[in-house]
Image (tube, rainbow, N blue to C red; front, side):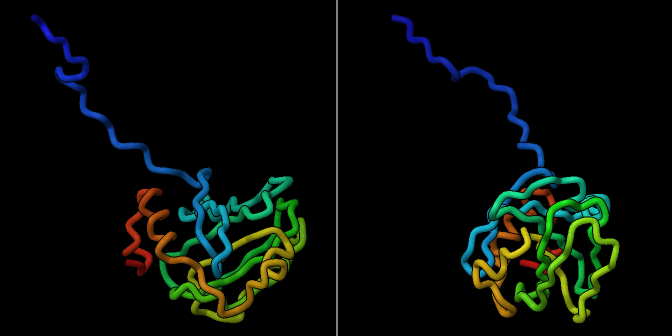
Amino acid sequence: MALLLNGCGRSEPVAPPAPKTVADYFTIAVEGHPVRMQLAILQPEMERGLMHRRELGQDDGMLFVYLRPQRMGYWMRNTYVPLDIGFFNSAGALIEIYQMHPLEEFRLVSHNDQLQFALEMNQGWFKANAVRPGARLDLKALVAALRERDFGPEQFGLK
């Protein structure tokens, strides 16, 4: 009696999944509020940001991830969606929040020079969700997202 087993022969090596890109979303909480974030890590991704978009989902945003703490500056060139931006330090604590208006060429500069992450959300999101300075960004979820983007979290001072 012959027994045929499918799938027991030689198998081709399975390639690991391709790293995710700036177009992919990751769920990362801010003070317990889940946010679908795109991660802007590379310089061209940061330069483009949310430019040319006409809408942004209610709990969608873009997190800009810097290698080291610094003062941050942003503007709204070619950005049509009114935004709020929250600046976080390297420990994931929200330090400053500002409103930004569509197509505004004025460069908004942070007061603090020890900021490592910037989160752009729809204007009013921080207030509507009672997210104030001192709120925390889920750094464990960020570490996992960085790995999915094929970046070592250590290069950002994260474990």
